[in-house]
Image (cartoon, rainbow, N blue to C red):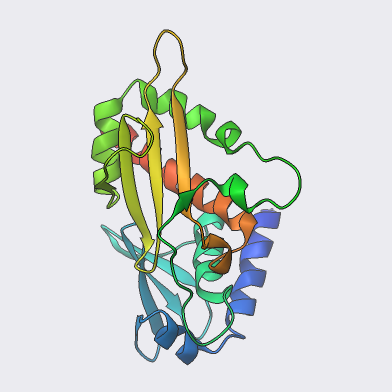
Length: 212
């Protein structure tokens, strides 16, 4: 019996076709990417990846070689970071950090709701969290608001995010925030910030599990 195709798989395939409609040479110049006749290469969350110039397929390099990636959050983030911004020149980073809720024009979005389960899981293993952040290419930063841990990640060579973590105590539960450059809306859709932060946190949790 044929396994039914999920909506996530359908969206990945649709995004792949849309990617192929873009001017690849412009994307390569715009973000200073390495490329050859078959592939466009980039690094995503400290993992080498490449996009087929013929099929649009995204591949990641693992210990056993190149493997097709169909993880929804990864693929959609890669496509969006490459294709969302219009124009021939890359957008500029402002160098000012804020939460994703800053980009919501109407309504209220509590990003802490999304990260709460990760904060609880990370709280019991602070040393493993530090090791996982560094394994994923994170670089420690000075605290911005009294947090216990701050790491900056190069999602791609041209787009960073910052992770803040506060350990829990008798009065307050653990807290985790992902901070975004204030010009993030020029780089990707608002919805993609949730794909990206979920991908980042899932990868950190997976690395931490490897240490157990």
